[in-house]
Length: 319
Ligand code: ADP
Ligand code: MG
Image (cartoon, rainbow, N blue to C red; front, top):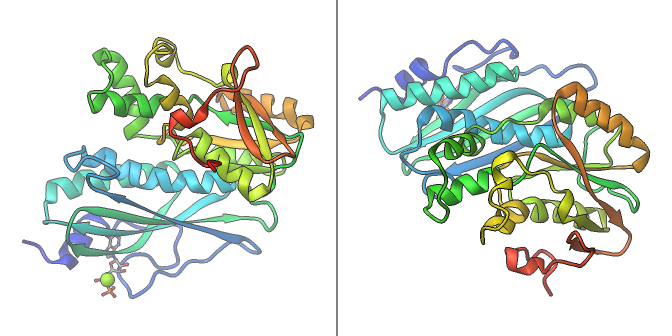
């Protein structure tokens, strides 16, 4: 069995072009751009909680970085560096090689250098810390939503949750549909370009990791405002359209996690600018509701009637 040192040498010591000093010393040395603020976030993925222990290690490597990049996207930050704390039950070189190839694939795509980490033995768990940069006062925070702002969401909702429901045997999908949706679950695309484009336009932003209502709820409580969301406006992918009558549908769309889209608010005056960003990025952006002064979150159906959102497992504003 190789030592921890060999393992790091073999799998996690690629050059770190963004760093003054990368993996191999007691600390990495990083040089932020002049005048930039650092945006820092950590996420842990635990086997059998956040992913299946027998998950494809290459996809896991991608996802482990991608979910952290999604947090940077939601701040409007540019990705720069990452560190990785890896807890492994055993040293499996094939598994590690595949994991590293997924991780570095995502890192290369988004200009991130892996600059350090830690390696320990125990139940499989992956903790990644991401560091990005953002000019002062330009970060997209959760506390800036104002009454009258429109609420937007990128991409489509519920895809990852429907894939998970299928993998858990709660829904039956065709093989082709499952393959399409599973890609959304296992290989999320962090919306970095969108986050950067939203600087100066969005009043608040969050990434949809725990479900639209829960995550929008965080914006509302941090901003001290309420919202109304139009159910009929929620963006659905082609496959989801076929499952609107399924009992799990509302849950997937309103409370399904793991889509890693951005939910953001912006003054209505920016509507056209946002449509132009959607066209430029070839990314669907949909206005789904508006911010109200009065706290509380209402989802209205096509007839304008409020939906009972408690049954979707949403309890953010429960008494
Ligand atoms: P120390 O005992 O000083 O913490 P380690 O032996 O844990 O040093 O790590 C040696 C070097 O390898 C350090 O630069 C550390 O950041 C890096 N490192 C350790 N584990 C990982 C990992 N899983 N991924 C990337 N770098 C790692
Ligand atoms: Mg160490």
